[in-house]
Image 1 (cartoon, rainbow, N blue to C red):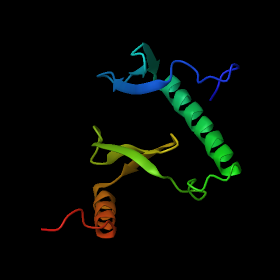
Image 2 (cartoon, rainbow, N blue to C red; image 1 turned 90 degrees about the vertical axis):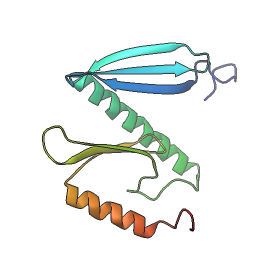
Image 3 (cartoon, helix red, strand yellow; image 1 turned 90 degrees about the horizontal axis):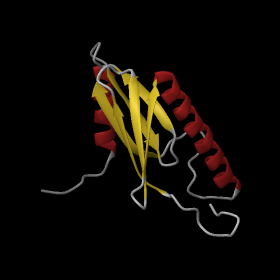
Length: 134
């Protein structure tokens, strides 16, 4: 993205950190730019969900524009190039909860019973090539 003078904008996002309060009522987000300047935001559940919805909307628009420009690396419609995943055991039941994050910033929430998690893990391990030979 360029500004009106044709230069890259200042304040490019370098890092992003998140944390959840102990009671689960709020989330702190910290944005760090390349100059190590920080912006700290605290959001309640509704505000955080609205933030995620806006990120998903913008990621969809970025994907649409990349596809319109003929970007060969754009995934097929309905697929997600997963760049990051994080899971944890639900504090209220035995389900596994987490999220998949796409390389374009899309976020897909996941909730599955342990049996499905085992099936998924087995299927991925059986599909992936061996990491090394002994």
